Image 1: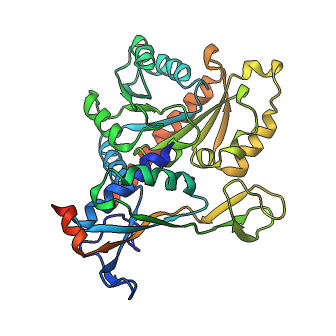
Image 2: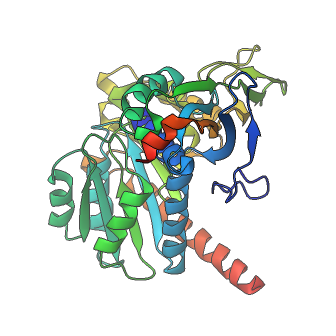
Length: 253
Length: 120
């Protein structure tokens, strides 16, 4: 790995050194290549492309059934009257989620990962090609439901949104640290079930804080659109923050 | 299982870098906080490497550097053996400092007659 920028490209002339005198024909070739290097290169390309068009991109992550698609439906219903919004749906198989998003009236492309348990940045770049994207819009990428694998794969998004739901239990942040450490915001969904299950909201909040003190936790009930206002306020703040960053960086050039 | 994807990526990078020479060993670094299970990589490597003629029979050497973390409560730095561990003071409020590396460090290639067979 390059010591300056952390880039992952293989050096054009790998350094060779004799390894073991007992194996005179064997040479050790230093590679120092990041295993995720290819994904990181695609993610960087996606990010550049999305930033150039001022498209606020959010990667939605959760376990299966936490309510990502329902949250997305409520969010789209609220945003579509005034904003251009696009969706990339990631699932192992089928078009069920894309159909739900389409019914709300949002342009969507479904990516099937087959045996893959996560979206990668290359798949997302194909998704970007397939969508009629316009500048100054929003793009939601709904990842494959999984609290483990998607955490490792940067898609080029500006923000990561983790959706947790109360029936999963309040201890998940400590059990799946990678996904919660990467979150910019955590939505706690299905809070209408709290009277019926054992879930301590304060314990959950404190476990999120342990892993990630900067992630805000927003309680919601996506099926009833409750808590959606706080989530929309968070979203609009992100758009404003990114706009300011861009003004700042362009004033430097 | 993301280990299968990652192992395929490792084999592709190494096979390409070998330029047709026979690879006898691959050296990987998998940090203890990387979120990747070294045993699963070993399991996948046997299956995946068999699909690359350059890598047939190659050995896999994995080093797993420990993680380092700093506790936000007691402010001590210490060694972490897994992402699920607490600080000795009992706190889980940890900033991870190192141990997330996932790096193909090196490969061993042989220039003996066998490698000509791979190229052909």
